[in-house]
Image 1 (spheres, rainbow, N blue to C red):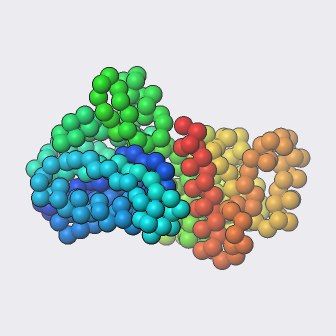
Image 2 (cartoon, rainbow, N blue to C red):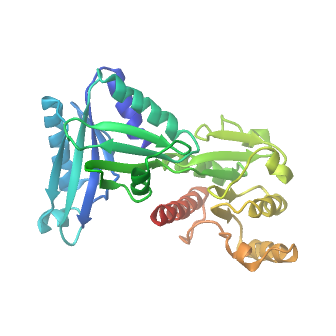
Length: 335
């Protein structure tokens, strides 16, 4: 998502027109649901994807037409069985795509784009609202956690991305960013594979280690923050909330357990601990001895990551990223 907005800003700064393409609604078997985006310029696809195949191919052609007419518009797609089969679907479906024309001269739109990019770097919920009542004359609003949202619109924004009507007007609403930071304790080999991957997946990451050589921006340029400090007193350096994720992968069982005991009291959204099954059994036994409940112990993902027989640091990073994606997607579905 951030890559698409960043590319749009670069194009506009160079004086190029751009079309922001959004899957606004879908039903049946379609490549992507509402919330998929891409940016198209006169040179073709600049960033993002709405799923490939027939819909994306036709959407790029439509975006090029929008660049010529300089007029935003909707287009409806209905996939035939043959088109669906081309992209691996069993049957067809329908998709409503919005083509949002933005010119370098549109100062308010460029200002909103700057606000979006800034918001995506913050640890707060952020919603985009497009008023599409007049599809050729769209209006964009940005709401962040802590700002006032009109009642009816707030209720609609709390659901999945998509179109909705409120007081006779047509809107598209989407949660652009969900509050929550991934705290990675231990800056070793797995963390060095994991953080770039999570950053690419638009997770905000903070890395902590008690050794400066394993917790600095040179090692983790993609991290929002790196912290060097005492693993036994993590509350001196950060505040972990119920919306955060914690990945514990320090250099030793003693440090892992120090962090885990503190973290469980914070009740984060996700806690994962790396280690062998023998180590995990010992960790659970220590937690029981220290008075943690069975529910608290079972809430931890131990060993960390999805069961894909991962062995190398890169493979473990993929398994952890997969687990975090699943948790994040589950939370989004609940909202």
